[in-house]
Length: 328
Ligand SMILES: NC(=O)c1ccc[n+]([C@@H]2O[C@H](COP(=O)([O-])OP(=O)(O)OC[C@H]3O[C@@H](n4cnc5c(N)ncnc54)[C@H](OP(=O)(O)O)[C@@H]3O)[C@@H](O)[C@H]2O)c1
Image (tube, rainbow, N blue to C red; front, top):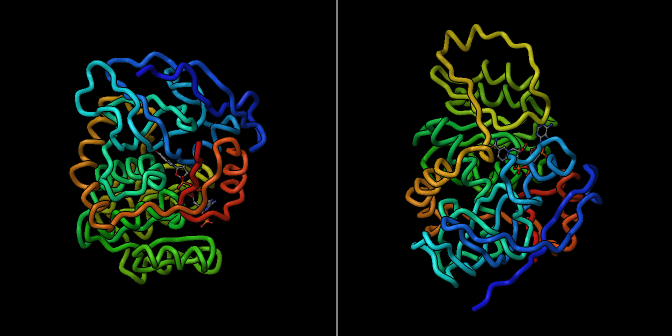
């Protein structure tokens, strides 16, 4: 069967608002030996895509052209060195770019097979958040059963995934969100406590709960000091973004006294073999939670790929809860 020669991707000529996104036809790159070609059922939209659109998050130099970090669909072709996947297999994949497309090239090592009963469209919302939560909450943060996780943005893509994965692992979860409605979603997904940070101080609630063992922070700013103050002895604070700024003045005395770890990471720039290692660990530990229903992609809205600008408009509004997906 001959392969398509071209695909549609979403590019940004000049950084700006959602209207800066353009859908264009491009020749399909040659498939390398360690890659697969995925005919997508859907592509996930993530907050980092909006930063990239605005020109604040340049892609790594070797990333494929175009916005988009994840997708799900069926294998259309597999490279010569790929023995794990064959045409027709249902998969989802993490990519470093070009994920908003009808045909996506992914490294086989960053591609995961999907259980039969998982909806192929919803599965497009899994890779970016599952890889991020696994790498930061479980590997770096070392969250263990019985421990307390504090996660901000609990109703967002990362937040909804973190709540479910932490609960599946037997941990307790405190989530913050910006409205009572979003807090209800956090509780529905399993959060033991959900705090509307606009109407109360989350730090008081965390203290009342005895502190947090692991804190997943995408906010930064004045949260950094609060986290040092409310972490339990031996606690781990993991930065994955700085929505309120990365320049802060903090008093590190409690960090020393409580033997805290303050660390962070980004996913996109990690080398392919590191992503393959993460994928293998996820398949072993997290994928069974998909089969038991303990982890379910929380989808807020779908848009046609041709209307990626509308999807970004919704994400920019902050009104979304869960994932936004594009249908090619
Ligand atoms: N380091 C990494 O490897 C990595 C990987 C993926 C994502 N990220 C980062 O993780 C963050 C979340 O990504 P996502 O895709 O889950 O985005 P998302 O779906 O938009 O969720 C982000 C949530 O953060 C909350 N929020 C926004 N601004 C805030 C602020 N100033 N203070 C407190 N909360 C705020 C919003 O909820 P409320 O309405 O409740 O405030 C929103 O639900 C992004 O900043 C992204 O860049 C990092």
